[in-house]
Image (cartoon, rainbow, N blue to C red; front, side, top):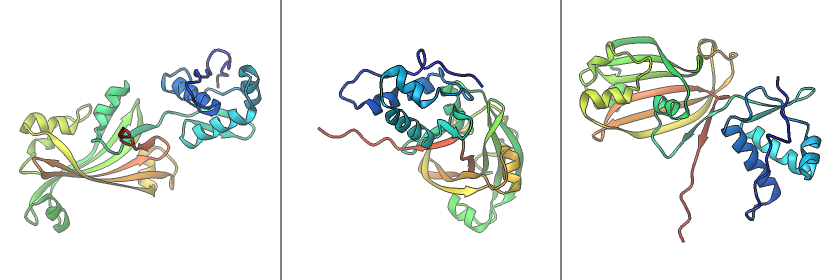
Length: 253
């Protein structure tokens, strides 16, 4: 575990009317976002950070507690405070594509197809997709990985008549939504998305490489094309690697 130098890494931003606590917090966030603080790095003791920058230990502690709540840092008795692996933030007001998000962040993503088959749609599924009861649908179970580590377990249902090529499509490093757009000339949009906390059972935890009972986010999504439902998707996302973010609209002047 690497020890960080407080002189060269942890910076305090210029005042700009902000309180000292907020300036230190923003400086730490910037270092985390830019990769100067790496997972596993050990922060200097609070008293040392405070002495180096001429600020109170209470101010340092406030900033560290806030970043711990956000999942950036972890405090352990006897070990100190160290940097956690980054969480992947999803803006709730925007349409989320796993492949595009990882590409934008510079991570190597990969999808493993655990299961893929054509089955008759159950009544509720058929109703949600606007299909006759028993109409064929493509069911897929996907494991999404980032830099070789599993992040998300997904179960997708799409109409077979509309997307028969999904049975043989290579989805290892392809966005499903890009595939739909290329083959059918339609742009997919988000119709509805619900997020709730859950705990993982033994199989789910084993696939995501976390202990059984670990927290996760359950995301239920309905995807549209030309205002018609084209996919139902359920996702289980590791709670230690995921963050939902809301960006409020700019205040009117």
